[in-house]
Structures are given as structure tokens and as C-alpha cells.
Image 1 (cartoon, one colour):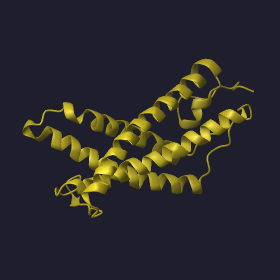
Image 2 (image 1 turned 60 degrees about the horizontal axis):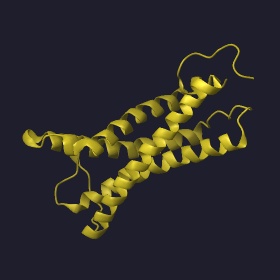
Image 3 (image 1 turned 30 degrees about the horizontal axis):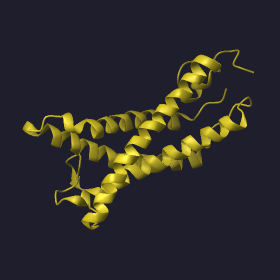
Image 4 (image 1 turned 180 degrees about the vertical axis):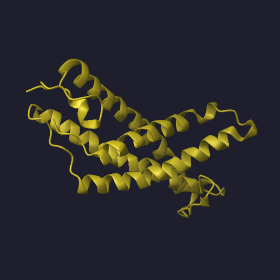
Length: 182
């Protein structure tokens, strides 16, 4: 069974960890104590990782163009192929739209937008109404990303438990079986 390239696999897993961590930070930051600056630390990391995700998504898109993914297995139905393509497209869109909307919403206040404390990232300079709309979009897209991840995990479970088709090897999970599904 053909696999994704090592670069694609590394980008996938690094970004998966970053995205899940950023979703957790975004959804749970209100529960972080505000004394001693813990919430500010969490949100600073959330913003910095969000900006990093924009860059890594662009790298990942370039990698995908230069290194096309392996073909779908021959036994995939047309519906499975369509769902896989739609889910991947939605992931790429969300990986750009969520952090970009967060970057735009940074204009809601006058605080600087530091990148891991190394330098200040310029803001877009939009008015508060647009920044507030970006905030709403950011939250909605966060929930949409959570739903996409759930769908992705359901697909993983389907292939692992129901199909037993060894498909997970394509993304670096496990070793290929000699008698992969024909």
C-alpha cells in the first residue's frame, strides 16, 4: 500500500498536535485562572501557535502540490473518495480561516500581538465592527474544526475496526500487512 511522503506525515502529525492544543486553549481559556498571568500566557501561546499554523498550512499546501498524495485504494467507493476529498479540503480551509480570523480579531483591542515573545506581529487595522465579526467567525470555525476532527476520527475508526483495511499505514501508523485488503 502506498504511503504519504515522510514530509507530509510529519506535517500532518505536528499540525494535528498544534491544532488540537490550540482548540483546547481556545475553548478552555476561560477556565484558566487569571491571577499571575496564566490566562495571558495561554492566550499568548494560542495566538502564536495560530500564526504558526497559518505558515505551516502554506508549507503543507506547497508540499502537497510538489508531492501529490498516494492514490485512493482501488476498493474505495465513489462516495468514500468524495467524502475524503471534501474533508481534506475543509481541513485546509479551516486551517487557514480559523487563525486568520483570530488574527483579524486582534484588532478588537490595542494590546500588541507578540509571536512567542520574539517580535510583534502587525495587525490588519480593521475597525472594531469587523474585528468583532471575525471573533464570532473564529468561534464558529473552531466548533466546525472540532466537528471535522470528530469526522476524521470516525473515519479512522471505520478503517481500523470495520474495514480492517490497513489504510492507517499511509499516515505512518503501524506496519503494513503482507495481505492488505485486495
